[in-house]
Structure formats: C-alpha cells, structure tokens
Amino acid sequence: MAGKNVTYHTVSGRVRRGSKTQWGSPAVYFCALLAVAVCIGPVLFIILGGLRSNSEFTTSPAALPKAWKWSQYVEVVNSSDFWGQFSNSAICAVFTTTGVVALGVMASYVLARYPVKGRGAMYALFAAGLMFPLTVAITPLYLMIQAMGLLGTKAGVILPQIAFQLPITIVILVPFLRAIPRELEEAAAIDGSSRLGFFWRMVLPLSVPGLVTVAILAFVASWNSYMLPLFILSDTANYTLPLGVAAFATEHSVDTAKVLAFTSISMIPALVFFSIFERRIVGGLTGAVKG
Image (cartoon, rainbow, N blue to C red):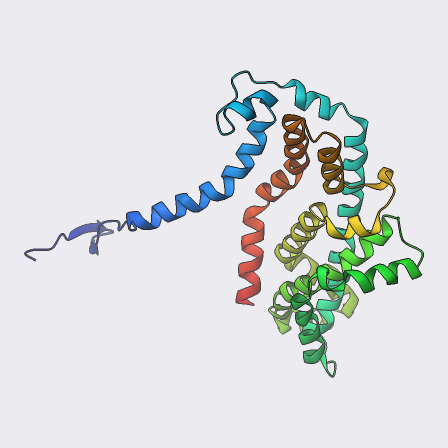
C-alpha cells in the first residue's frame, strides 16, 4: 500500500503482517529519568557524602569526593553501638514479619474460604485500618503498652507493628486465597484431607507469592520504623537503627561525613532486601489485584 510502511513475515508458510516497533514519546522517557534521578539522587548523595571530608562540604557540597575516605565507613562498622542497634532492628523485623505472616494468612483464610456471618464487615474493618496511621494512635498506644508492662522492651515495639501491618496483609492475601479453586478443596476432602490438611498442603504453597509480598513489606516497614521505637524504647541498649542514626547525628553533629556514613550503612540492608525481592512484590500485588 502506498504511503505506509508495511512489513510481511513468513512463518510456517504463512504471510503475517507486522509493524515496526513503536517507541514512546521522548517526553515520557525524560519524565521517567527525572523520577529515577529524584529517587536515587538523595541516596547517592548520602553514600558519597560518607566518603568525603567535612571541609569539602563547606567548599563544594555537591561535588564528588576528592579523596575517597573509606576510614569513616570502617569506623562505623567497627563500632559496637552500630552492631547492637543492627541486632535490635533485625530482631524486631524478624519477629514482626513472622507474626504478620502467620496471623495474616490464618485470618485471611477464614475470611476468604469460610462462610462466616459478617465476614464482609470484618474484611471492611481490616481495610478501614489502612486509613488510621500510627501517628494518630500513638498516644493511646503508648498508654496501652505502659499498662501491659511492655514499655522499654522490644515486645512493646513488635506487637504494635504486627497489629498495624495486618490490615495491608489481609487486603493482599484474601484475594489470593479466594482465587484458589473450590474443586481443589473438594478433591482434597474426597481424598480424606481435613481443612487443616488442605490449608497446609495446598493453600500455603499456592499463596507463596502473596506471602512473600507481605513478608517483604512487613520487614521493610519494621526496619525503617522510627516513631514507635522513639516512644517505646528509652534505654539506648535497645535502640534500633533509626533511633541510633538520630542519636549518632546528635552526638556527632559537627562531623557531617561520619553521620552520612552511619546513615548509608544503616539503610543498606533494607535497600538490598527490597531490591532482591522487587519482582516478587510486583508479582504478589498483581496477583492480589487479579484475585
């Protein structure tokens, strides 16, 4: 046809009409690159800032390091305070993630598979929990933790984190569990499997993408949590890394380079963890939407 670029491809004796690859508008790529720069720029500034001297921040705040000073990172890594705070964050994150996944999948299984009266209202109640951030409930939560005798302990941080992470966990897992065919459950019942056996042998393996997604979200949220540990933990020996960064910045307020080194090392575990499982997060959320 005149005036049109048309190509034809022969596949298995047939002529197939094709078209050239259509690339997006340059403006779209520019906006995407700008968004990436906005997200990555501060992270790179912090990491490179830990390799500079304090005098360089005064003369050229945005320049690259003239002499790469790895000694500041070495001092942070060799600090006992850093590893104590690292272990506290790891303990809180692991126990929070375990509790969120265990309680979330059990509650989601009931809401998705059992004909319980009012399950729609219960699901809506969990979904409504997404609208109440921690900052709104911090004062009554503090009084509740104090009354339970958990003030100043890691348990006082872990239990509220589990509670506040359950709404998003249930919202993600319920569609996964609801999408499992009823025929599988009926076939398992015919084979003599109980509901609990069906849950362990079929439901959990089939819902692995959703479980991985909620586990990653819970781990990262717990690792980066600052406000709740700030109100609950008073002993510096129990400080998590976000509190340790704030305390370190206050103690070394004139040593900007070392503060940036401490900050960059503190955020590396969450960045690495999130980057490794990024595809699983996207796949889990996609499966939840399809379900």
